[in-house]
Length: 204
Image (cartoon, rainbow, N blue to C red; front, side, top):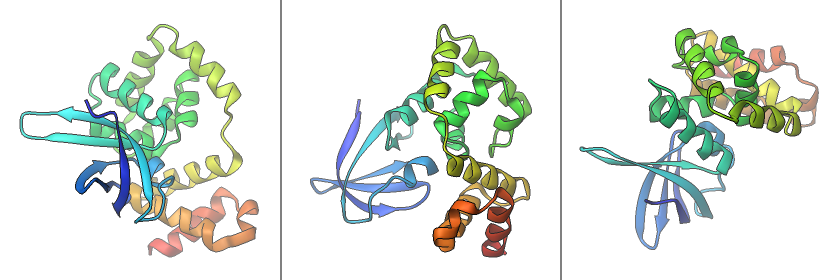
């Protein structure tokens, strides 16, 4: 089992990266949450990994933090109908802390807004994860300790709003992040509506 890779970031895309480890290039699929935390191309990077072995391929999934990988494994191992593709979609559509809060509060409506996750899947996620002994209590404590910041909540809400308008998750995320970056010091005062409006201008 490959548990992490430590090397040079050779290529970086919102959905996958290539890490050069002693002359061997490893292609790794990543969620948007990890893409945001990557160093510039050409710089050293250490990425946590999960290896999926199939008959036709060995696929590496990568994460910049332990909570991201833990949630990914929890989803694919304990929720029926959730495979690696949807596991990445969850992490791309919502922060770990926001997702945990949604599960603890049985907020299926918020989870269902994630690209690829419908109402029935959201209900199954909440039901099957809350049934796991100790998870709800542990997440409740974690959610209380790690309340998501105002900017994190605004970005998530704006991305979900753009997705609901028909834009792809990757494009929506990039547009919202660029809108924040372009705003400079004014970013702190931007509302969700402001982010959606600026994001639409970048997407059209």
